[in-house]
Amino acid sequence: MNELVAQFAEQAGVDESEIIDRWRGRPDRIAEDLFRVKDLDTGEIRDLKLFRPYQPKIMHAYFYGDASTLNIYKGRRIGVSFIIIVCEALDGMMNGNSFFPIVSSKEEQAQARIRDLKTLFENAKIEIPFAKTPTQSEIVLWNGTRYKAYTGNPEGARGDDSAKTVFIDEMAFLEDQEATSRAFSPFVSLGSQGLMVEVSTPLSKNDLFMRNHARGTETGYDEDGNKIGTISIQQPSFANADEIDVEVSLLEQDVVPVRPDLNIEKVEEDRVKDPQGFAQEYLCRPIDDSYRFFNEQSIVRAQERSQRPDYQYGQYLRKQPGVMRTMGVDIGIDHDDTVVTVFDHLGEKRDMRYFEVVNNDVLAEAGIQNPDRGNAVHVAHRFAQIHAQMEVDYVILDKTGPGETFQRIIEDKLGRGVIGFNFSDKDAVNEMMGDMNAALRNDRVTLAKDDEMYDQLASIVKEQPYDGAKPKYSGKDTSSSGKDDIAMATVLGAFPPGLSVQPSRRMAVREPEEVGPSEALPAGVEQEPEPVEPPTRAATVSFGARSVGRNGRRTYTPRYARRRSPT
Image (cartoon, rainbow, N blue to C red; front, side, top):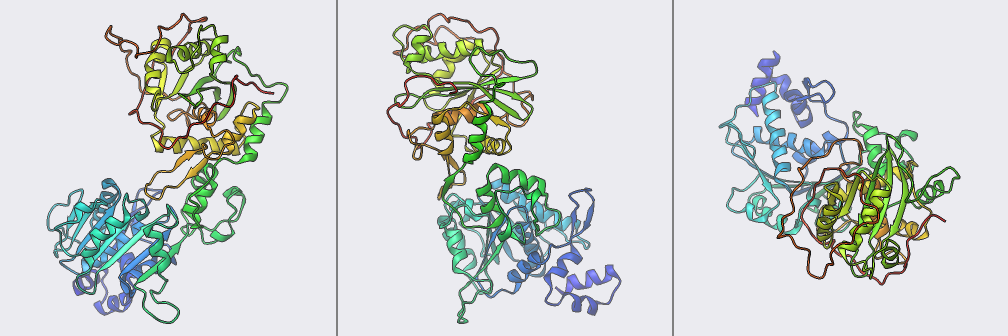
């Protein structure tokens, strides 16, 4: 510490005693005096300015709290992880030969914290030498202090030094919180100065992170003055978090962000996509393991718009200039339904022009003898008819499970304008569900008037798993029919991943592949019949993912036998 005081006093041109008086008991002042950061607006390097009161509060809890665990239940986008890095930077500078493991669920996230440290040291107002050239995963200072990035894999924790502080970033998103905690706890069990710092936005209401938070207090002592061992701090993204109505635009109510530079418009985008998720992640409100995702009134409004006299709907509707037309397909085998939806995309608007459940009656009407809705060739024949009749630009096909076979046969039928989508890609599903929810709430979607469609959309539940970091969406357990195929096809057609934000943007192009004679049809699949109306055009793009079954999908006996149209 004396070395830092002397160096800073010399550079500032003041007496060392003045610096000692200024810094005594104030790690926040030390940080602001020593460190500089890049301005997010200008890109220029400027003095670090903490966001008060919560960042200094966290720093004081880190340095002076009487507890072995510091648990911070935080809102998004407020720099809590960064301020812990600032604490560790100061701690390591003042206490040589210390070790600071930084743990995260993903290697790149832990390495990002190492980059934050490196940037702080390199841009500091005083010289902070490295003992050796920093790597992506490790920094060693001139005084022997070491910072190292770890993933949450417990195996990676073995064989290293005891730590002064273990920082677990976004703890709720670790694959196995208990195993990681057990693995890294021995790092801080030696001596009396070890500290475990747990920081996260929430994922589940009763995981280890939240249980640790509930056990602690802001002081680390209970009401009777007994030491608990855990300091718990809850810090929402807004100072008036309890007053915010999650169903009202943030731009239309008084909100007080805890950091003045918080981009409210960006946060509003998150709110409108998922108000309940916004409440959990930004406002630190109690967590629901699952909740109905789409707003029912917004679905009603979307269906009512299709009842206007001037609204056009039907499988023979010609496409207007400037419109991109997509066909969303959810493949169903056995008791699930195969559903086709067709949407016109124009700017941010999504207008449903047609949808049907492809069953045996539909296939018979399409001219197929001995129709079998489980036969990929028969189903592909019907897709080709709709594709040609409605001048579809892109076909977005559920490629999970049996969809893989369907995709190859349908590609042979339509060309390479088929986009295979994997419903096991939870990030992509989360994106398109959020886009659909936002568009419904902002009245940018028009849907066919259909009771079953309404029920399935209104029944979609967002599930927050206890043991994973990705949400799941399903309506199987909550819809009256026990199905969600219409809902999935609707979202897929309206907001296919890769086309949901900028419908006109180019997608990755792949040259058409030649089909060799060895690629015979699967056993039990009949030779395809000639289409009644052959496709007139096809896009030439394609992408796909691994074929994995959609986990947890329940099956039921089909309830509806014929395709539907608006009533």
